[in-house]
Image 1 (spheres, one colour):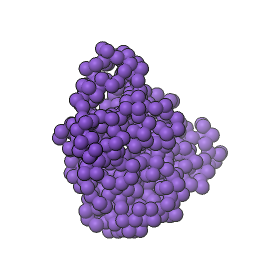
Image 2: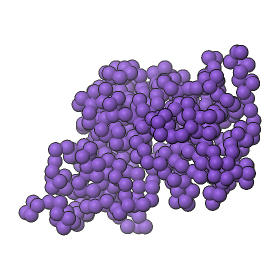
Image 3: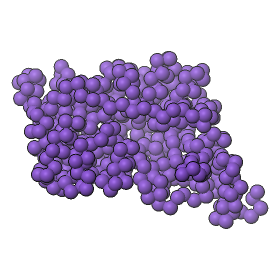
Image 4: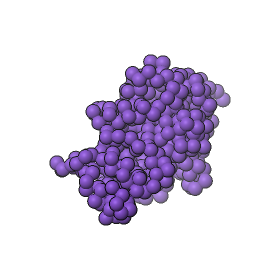
Length: 443
């Protein structure tokens, strides 16, 4: 049977696809750009027929119909690998539960620890001439999830960028049903405006980056400020091996600053596991032979990261204590995002020859009209430690940069207080003494 004939045989309407889900099933929807829409809407309409349907997903980029239709969670139970702003709001409402994970371990979770998925529905590009459905915009753990699915449904979307790589597609022979999603939607996200604080942090990091460095850059204003600063820095021959491909990387590549020529792993290629950004970024990535999407266990596991020299891992945190512990995923008991790849890139960069990891944060934030320090003597009660003190390397605020490797608790305390806003340094010194973080007569 030809690929086209097999496709015609397997085509199905969204309502018929949703009918494959039964009460008590585990349903997997993938994450970010590959979360389906028509299947989600059809399943939402069946809510009154269903009980105890357990749904796994990750980083929702738009509201999910089945959860909007079931605000009390009487029909659908939601589990999530990494929160977006939407997922976070639903967590506050008591509708979604976080699954702790280092992101790079996700494929192994599916293959070793997760029972077979009853139904998986993944949004993909339309089938190509060779019978493959591409999900390269979010390769992540999707191939592993499809391998574990008793029933695999793909929902095609012409708006998705087609991105080559490895484990970035599934063949028609492995698919049970195909929903024709037409043009569909590839959700976009906008980056926050770059602030003066972001620029000052970026300028400090630039002083530590050399020609031939290999970049991992996270999402947010500060990492994108680093991209903007690199564009005019004169630094050349950069490489990219990252978890997320962000908008700022397009400019670096188009200006010829990223060549990937000095990489040991995948020389000449920009490597990532998923993208989320602007339409311009998706168009740049579409069938671009210089960019490739690989599964997250390839991009994020430290031993792979370290195969490239001079890895520069640049990430954000929301709070750091005077011993160097970073809390990047929660605010007390309120969960914000997820561990993601932060810890793995911190470790991979350190293990890389000449590599460095940078933890960025503004020194203060405002809440209810009151200013608070992000550098604290003790983390907020309930806060989750994302990067332990033993792994922390460079910490950067608008007031300075310090490398904590090899520093005693007392020396770390003194250095981190120096990165705090001046208005909080005296109180931090008092608290450090009260907590016995520094010996007598240290200052």
